[in-house]
Image 1 (cartoon, rainbow, N blue to C red):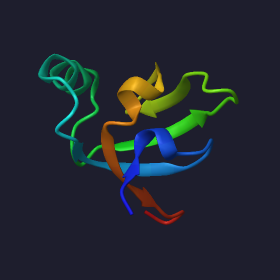
Image 2: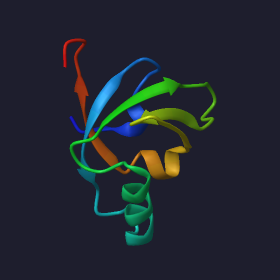
Image 3: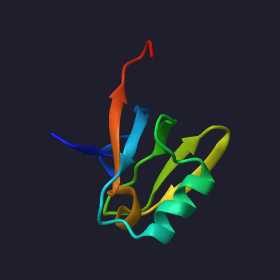
Image 4: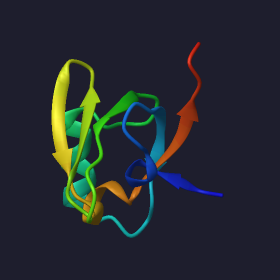
Length: 82
């Protein structure tokens, strides 16, 4: 089962594995400029209902991403001791 950044719930952490082939190159470049690159750890800070954008922490920065972008980042969930 492929997990995406969008599938995270508040409080979960993940490692970014990469981007799917559907995400346009300009979005991929911009996401990497923001710090969303393979190997980076990301935390889901807030996950509201009804498809509202989710809030993520990468490094010491907070970003709000909608499903249109976050669903194209492939991730691996991290446990509590990782």
